[in-house]
Length: 362
Image (tube, rainbow, N blue to C red; front, top):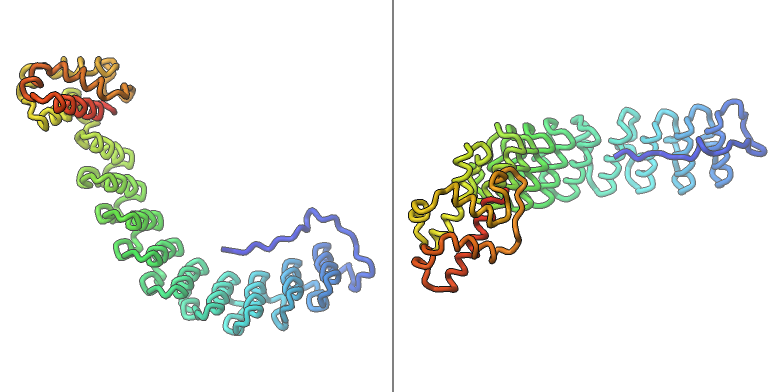
């Protein structure tokens, strides 16, 4: 990250210093202000009182002089302000700045070299391979943490991809599943976060899935659903989410694309499942009641309009016990014959209400 050099110059009212010791015609007002500040702070302004220096270079020299740093030969216009910062910071830290004092080296790269040397890390071999400052940031950080940077210190990865591999390794994750330049940094980030959450990311660890699709798939995986029902690269993220939503409701994954009659059957299936769990004869339910009519009755009990079933605007009562009893009344004869114990009948009523509500709550 670049360190921004700031100075409140544009808003500062200019006033010519008293007894200014240099020919003011050779300097602009920003340079004069830097020389004036140096005089007021007691630093040796002769080191930078030269119009060849920009005011930002002057500012770097002045600030480090004030910190007591011997800027020496590096107070030279051939160095940019960023390079001066990296060199002066290195001098202050006691590192051998001759390792990176070449003006051909980018200032941000110089900063990474200096930070590495401060921690006993020499990243010059990677600099010589042509890595940019963003890439070098994560190579340096990985070396400092003792990570196997050979996994990602490769020009085929950009800085953002390296950051995701570094973060995975630093958290003890097996990054091999996404250590592939075919994944962009957003896909890598999604897979890394999934691994960190303990999810099986293998179901979507394929560059053909966008990171948005990966996120939708992993939401389903987190819910304990069978990814084969929704891990399809031909589906939009919203379609994957819809499939996950349906499966969580106990409906077929492709419920949204089913014909109306099949949707009705799908919504009613959880109720038949509840009946089956309590040994209420499902076949008798199907024989005795017309499915559409029974669904209409149940919908009425739940306080909704029959023609609104499945359109997304359904509202339910929160009293599952009341709904369960009302629904159970529809199966009154069957329930009394199949479930003799009254407490068991009550439990069935509650299960019936819960499952029916889940099926219809779209």
